[in-house]
Length: 223
Image 1: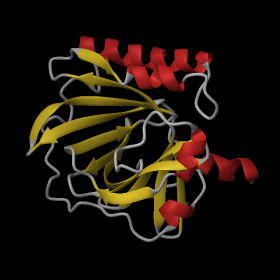
Image 2: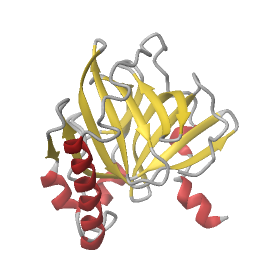
Image 3: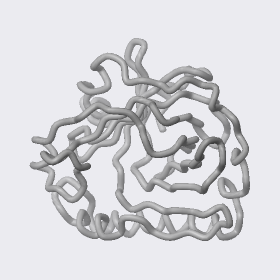
């Protein structure tokens, strides 16, 4: 994670953006809780600003070629799943999400993804990543299971996604985290499972910069 938004303070809003190839596929407003040695801790409660690509029938766009992604509308709505405390560790190919239902901790979600790249432009700051689709669901007792393996296999080797070698690295990162969960090591050791930040208002997606700005690594390569 670059130091683009390194001056962020608790309570500020950033946007987590996910790309498929050069195309923005999802944006998620998040409120900064704190920055620690473990990374950037974010709060994404129900009602937060959220946008994602949608198929013509309104369903989420998942197993679609890159050319279909380019044509799909990015629909703005709100986060509706669970309240989420999210850790984005610097330079690591994942983020870890703590799921809460009305304040009760339900388990962890490990999103396997490209290491986040930070950026800042005016009053807007963000973190850009590429979702590797393969995820882990980790129960409070540390047991875990893979999620979206079919989608991961479908994307591997296709243009705009990842190679077979890159897929092996993604799965290796997931296996490392599964071992940490089984052993009860951080972040699966109870840290932040009782955190209370629900007094923070849901963050929103403001303006159009989050929608129009190219991916951070594209701008860095052109500099």
